[in-house]
Length: 286
Image (cartoon, rainbow, N blue to C red):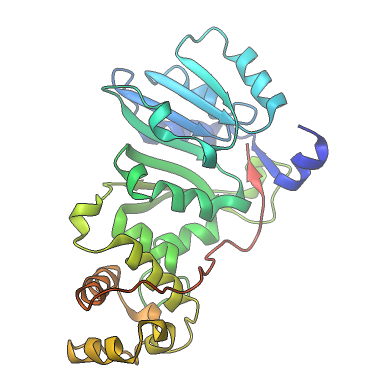
């Protein structure tokens, strides 16, 4: 991959073996049952600690030169395979092995943090994944676990907390990476994924409601739900919903209940445009 593309990806390579070892130690890997998919393996800082501990390791790396280096470095490990490509374009089902737990790990590109998180939270992904452990910007980590009513609370907070149990494990300072980023990072884990049938709500509608409401987060809930139409808004009020509340005031469970109630009112074929909930700074870890 040409240097111009690497610069666009803004790769920040993890160079601190203590941080890498701490992340891998936190996984408590079982070689007898754990299949690890590593996103953006880069120069192998995490791979080096993962390879001896898991039953199978799939290192996904977009940069073909880095991927070639990984293949050479870990050629003696028969259970390690390197996939050259974009994780977002991989079919997780194709990477799975029967009888093994799928665990996803990575120091991921800042620029596509939200896209990766949304991918792992998709219904088909949640059915396959045991847990996910990622290094993200500290700001994004705070948003993922933010409480209702806080400035950081948004779409990523609601989705993460309603579809899984997220936790921030520990922070990593900028000096642990080269080139050194301008922001701190943190390791976040999502576990205990909830399946679509457990939610009792139309998940597509749930996501549409979140996008439309948080697209106007400083306004009343009513403003973000105008696309539902006057009749449905009146019906929601009759069910007890205070549409003068702001989107960030509703808990994850309230958002699920809102989706259930909207669904009970009939078809909602027309929806809003998607609203981004992306991190402020782009960059990547390798």
